Length: 198
View 1: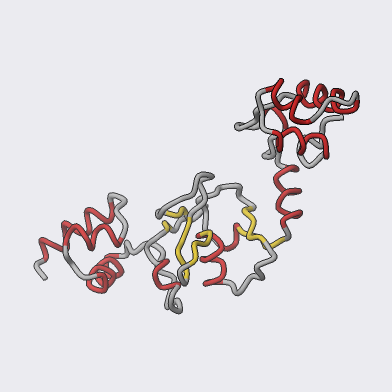
View 2 (view 1 turned 60 degrees about the horizontal axis):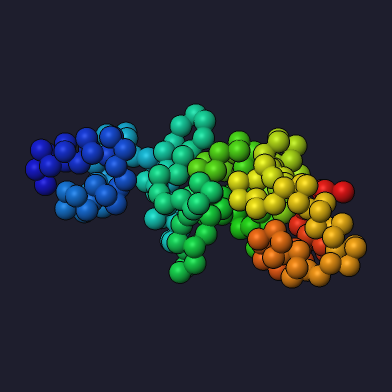
């Protein structure tokens, strides 16, 4: 392989290109790129020999003193996603499992650093969904009520719904009056949503 081609690949990689994109754009094989980048001391995510299928994680995040940032695809909430055995999984969970050990499906891998793109194992703690929600609440990250991005009701609407229902108005009538779905009103009446409003 001509040194000039490796130099071009190295420049692309150092400019933020992923191993996959550099391989695609230069036509240089992945193992050749890994070897060249490792020798140059620029290989991102090189943490030793990871078992398959986790070997694909190498090069998908940037190592540093702070957070290790996921460079691959993300979901709508900014969390990295990774395809593992045909199933989409959270990237931080996949990296944690690869480097630390298995995590029960019933448990969450929670970010102590609050950075959804971070995959650094010592920034992750394992806990229940309730632990994760308590952590978010303590840090002021949970948004309730009309402050929530997709809220269609206000706290006043919720009080009005409950009052009208107590006074005998039907759920479909209330829903029609407010221009929301019947299930939205049912959830408010049952307390399945807007439980914080008294």
